[in-house]
Length: 239
Image 1 (tube, one colour):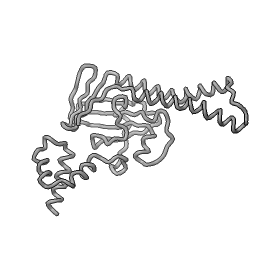
Image 2: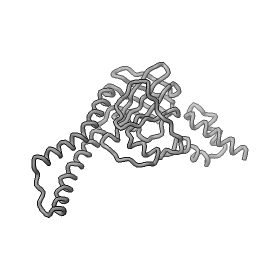
Image 3: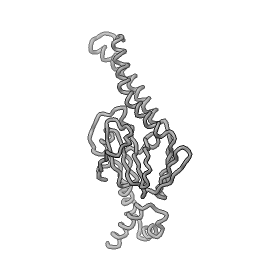
Image 4: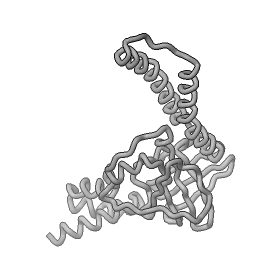
């Protein structure tokens, strides 16, 4: 599977819709509440306008800062995940570099606290910064990239490398220091099934001949597929 990622407007559109829903909600809910609570018609005064503007600014500023931060880091970057060949191609401006997935030295998903819910199955109130996140990716040769969700909606997907760690922050501003390290999550806590789990389920129904074909044609399959095929074939032969 080969996917190409470049700057898109999805995150900005989501943010604009969040604003629209909030504004419409306040325009509908407040007058209705005033009518039922006090029995009189809703009147807009200067104090209320200031409160309304202050609330919108308070909710928007962190998200806008993140959007600018992410866009400034990724405006000239595109990348390709070529999982069939275990490769990552990263284009910065006009130069393209090719890396093997095995060359990844450090992989950290930096996400908002809201997305920790999906891993811990807990609950936290969502904020307008909740959807923002980025992939802090370092290769063995020292090359480091910050691939944000303005390029790729990777949030809560099974990472492509097993050594991926997670950092959850209130506002996931891009951190270029090397002092902070992420935390690990066991495979079982992921909402989506891991690639290995899906392969195991699919390959259990394959015949011995089909599994042998995978092992005889390793160049056509990813490493995970080969490992799963070897494991299931061993179990079938033992059985």
